[in-house]
Length: 447
Image 1 (cartoon, rainbow, N blue to C red):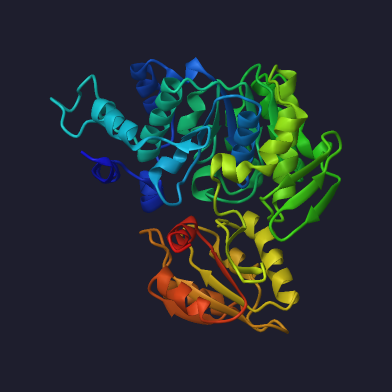
Image 2: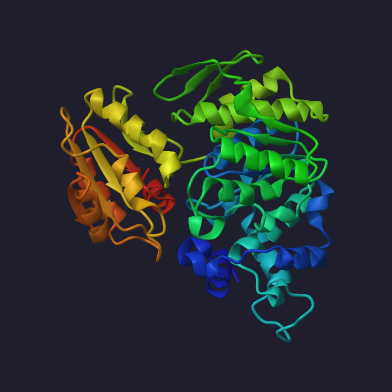
C-alpha cells in the first residue's frame, strides 16, 4: 500500500472518534497495555511530559515542545486531531512523521491480511480504535528516532485515555470546563476527576487554571490519593503580570523570565503561557537544562519550530498589513468565552465581520452561539455564513442557522465551506472561520 491507501485502510478498519463520535470512543487502558507489551514498551526509552485539559492543551504542548527543542533536546510531539494530514499528529523536532514510516509500521504491526483473527504478531487482534493505534505508532516512532523527551497530549479526558499508560516526568492539566460531558461527566468536579487520572505517584503535576473551589478540592484529593510529589497551581503565582496585545503577537512581561514575545495572540494565550512558564520552572527543578534564551526562543519561534496552526491565525492580510482572514479551531464554550469577546472587539473597532461557521452536533451549540456577536449589533455589519463541517458528526447547516436565528444571529446557508468562504470574501471587512476543527481544516487548503 502507498500512504493514501494506508490511511484509507486504517480509517475503514478502525473506529475513528473524529468522524463517528461516541461509537468510536473506546475508554480503558487494557488494549493499549496489551499492545504496548507486544511492542516492547517503546515509551520507556525516553522521558515524557503528559498534557491534559479541556482547552489550551494543544498550545501548551506545542510551546513546551518548542522550548525544549530550543534548549537542545530532541523532542517528540504527539497531538490530535490533525487539521490537514495525519502526519501532523506525530512530530520530532517539528518535522512530521515520514510517510514511509507510517506505511511500514502499519504493514508490520497492523497488516490488512493476517493468517487468523488472533494472529500474535498483529495489533489488530486487540480491536483498537484509530486513536489507540496512532498512539502506539507515535510511541514507536519516538523510540526509533531516539528522542530525549516527548510531549504527549491527551486525546480525551485523562484517566481512561490511551496515552495514560506512560509514566511521565511531569503531568500538566491546563484547565477544566464543559466538553465531552457524555463521557467525562456533567459537573466540573466530575470532569476534573477524569483529567486528574493522569496524575502519577512521585510525579509533579502543574494545574494551569483553577477558579472553581470544587475543582481545586478534587485536584487536591486526587493528588493526595495518587501520592503526587508536587501539586503546583500556576494560577496561584501568576508569571505574567503584564501583557501587550499586538495584531500578530503578544508581548509578556514576566515575573522571573524577562520579556517574552509569542505569535500565539488569542486572548486565552496569556493563561496558557502562564501554565507553560510554571511547567518550565518545574522541569528545571527536576534536571532539565532550559536557559532563559531557550525559553525566549521557544515562545518567539513556536510556530516555526512546531508548525502549530489554527490558533487565532491570520490566514490573509490586506495590502496595508491589516487582517483580512482569521481562523481559530475553538469549538466549545470554554474557547468562545475568549473568542466571542475578541470578535466583538473587532466589530466595535469598526470592522465588518463575515463569519464562516460550522459545528459538530455533540457540542454545546446554544451556549457557543450566544457568545458570538449578534447580527443586529450597532455599527459595522455582522454577517454569518452557515456551513456543513465535513464530518458525519456535523450539525446540518440548516439546523445551525435555525438555532442561531433564535439568538439573533442571521445569515445564509451553504452546502460547503468553500462556497461559504467564497461568499464571505466578496464582502468587506474581516472574515473569521471557525466553530470546528473540521471547518478550519477545510479552509486551510485555500491559504
